[in-house]
Image (cartoon, rainbow, N blue to C red):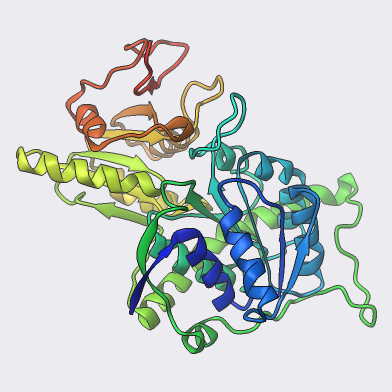
Length: 391
């Protein structure tokens, strides 16, 4: 049975179903509702876990690092400046191969100060060695968090997993969500059995000093692990579908079968793109949507299979390039197609920054080639278009 619940609360309930044992948190908008509700569950005895209040996000991730190293199933959540304050520890956790699960409620980075959603925070952390999932709606948030533990704790993986949720436009809305029973989740997600853990009776060394003679080998092993994790992610998605009836794919598609034009997007903005596609259908026009559910490791093969025959690709991004020629998602897709000998028309649109609304009409304009910005023609210095800029 589905029930209406705020998505942030639903995320907390998913962590409860996963039987997290240690939660460490520091409040920051717009993720606070998740850890706030988890603190209530722990205080009321509804979740048997240790809840650690800390003085910063850096400390929150440090506490998760220590708890996971000791063999506990851990969770934290953050946003924006909080995620960047964790930045050092994101590398430490992935390098130590600790399966911490974190919800990043995506928010714009200062300055100027903004509490609203875009993808600047996760794009700044995209190469820290974490497996990264993106969600379009509340049901996906619940399911992704449960699957995240199964993925990260698999001994063929042993890596942290970040579940990305758009701030406010997804995190604070109330949606009908179906929750599996505790018994169903327990069958899907067994107790965490670490391969190595810190214990006084079984001393081990973790994170020792890496001399130049071994550092490259350690990073190569870590890189190999995250690349190979894609197969395990698919396995977990398949098992989840068999048990719960909801199918997830590394790359999701909508109306792409006979469409020569496709949008590419991350996160909840896909719902507005789908609305635009339905309006275009009424005019007899064909457009599709390609969404990356898995962003790290990058699902290159699955993207090639979808994009190889398209004549026009519009990559939409909610993060400014920061002086680069294109946005980060466009750059990866363009490199992928070039390396595989695929030549197609690609366009890069920067939109929805700092929580700016992007309505379906904007995507219809993009399809029709009439979207406008301040400087309308890309130049050698930049190959993207800012959408909806006034001035």
